[in-house]
Length: 183
Image 1: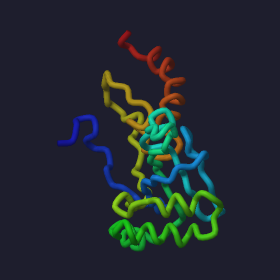
Image 2: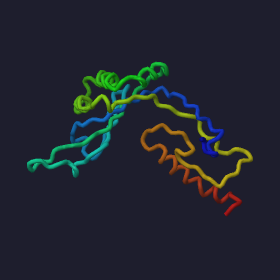
Image 3: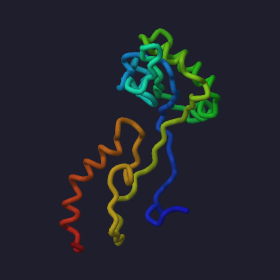
Image 4: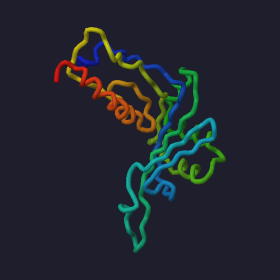
């Protein structure tokens, strides 16, 4: 069931023309030790970040730390045709992984090794979607509920935009609270 507050809000998603392919790699590399990075070539973007494990939790075998970590990667690129995105979205992980490897051929180290150490069953793809924002000021609507951040503003899942929008919304909150007749 749709919560009362969400009734009347358009749930219609629209494709933004960006394809995402994500996977999990087990390749250890200093660039991925307790931090992430991203790299791009002008047409594609590859973002990597720790997913599971850490330097402190690596097992020690015969007095040496043995890296046992997982890294999440997210590959994105412009793909304007929604029909083509839907074909990719339904593709198996091995097909998506081969496509990312093809597009990243010749990229700097450790990109190739990261992709080689990715199991196809961890790979999936989808189009980047969005929806229309919630109307902020509906005439005659009264509520004691305040929504901020990605609870009210649709966000694409990049760089903490929902949290950043909540911080921006927070600066307006005192103004609206002071205007309120309910103190």
